[in-house]
Length: 80
Figure 1: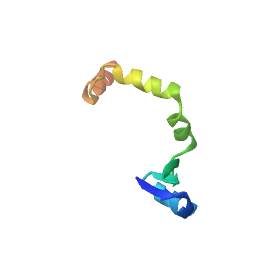
Figure 2: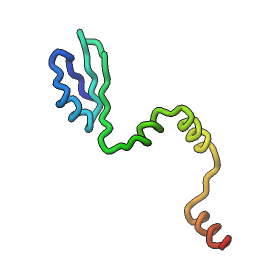
Figure 3: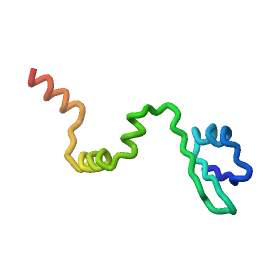
Figure 4: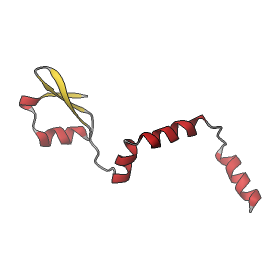
């Protein structure tokens, strides 16, 4: 994580750095902003990343029993 004082922050540089690591902007030594790079993400990914409903679904799904790919493929082949 990179820390930059607001008085010395250059927005373009902070945005570029944020693509590799989080950038914390400080004022008088205290954090006031966080810049997180999102280059390469589409709008759907951005919306889902902030969706409580989506993360609740993911948490519930992770509690469910899983099967291996081999078992899944076997089930698919047997049903056809």
